[in-house]
Amino acid sequence: DTEVTQTPKHLVMGMTNKKSLKCEQHMGHRAMYWYKQKAKKPPELMFVYSYEKLSINESVPSRFSPECPNSSLLNLHLHALQPEDSALYLCASSQDSTGGGGYTFGSGTRLTVV
Amino acid sequence: RKEVEQDPGPFNVPEGATVAFNCTYSNSASQSFFWYRQDCRKEPKLLMSVYSSGNEDGRFTAQLNRASQYISLLIRDSKLSDSATYLCVVIIMRGSQGNLIFGKGTKLSVKP
Image (cartoon, rainbow over all chains, first blue to last red; front, side):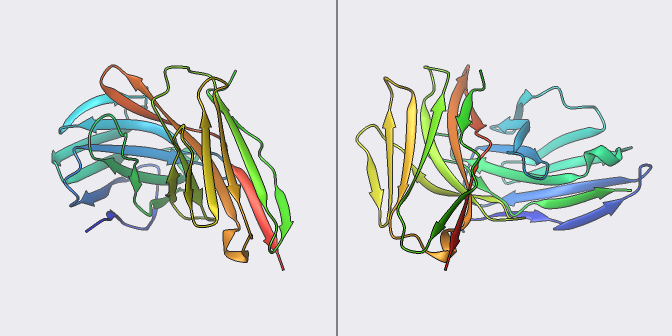
């Protein structure tokens, strides 16, 4: 299995909703990442988990809450989002925290906040 | 100065053309280098890693010049299916954690 699987693929949520994005990989990778990508922009790093511990939080607002239940799973909990949070949310993984072998990206969750 | 800079294009080329993309990076401590390809509304996919010795994969050749902090990608005999955005990507270490830094991407459009 050489894939990173993200669910759901599409999500529309209101500003008062609570939802979660899920990410799963079975490649034995020990680092996992959340990225946010707006149209015609490169991906922007949000969070990094290394060996199931949060190692980087790029000053992301608290309405985004990451969780790493085990080495294969990564969640992103969403609450009270704003319309400007609409974007493609990408999960990625790498063999270890150095990322030297390259990152594998999931196909993303396209989020629309209404 | 941005950490990773690329010509945004678009590059519009006919099928069969050779096209070259360039990228510069500002952090001399950058550790690893990649070219990713991203199709419209899809995730980035690793195209190839980039090494100082240069590496080739079929019609694609990548080169790294550490002294000039410059990365290149050459595509020979362009195909319609090569149309995509090509992202230059650099890993910068923050302590023991690698941080993937993306350029803004270069858009390639191959026409019949």
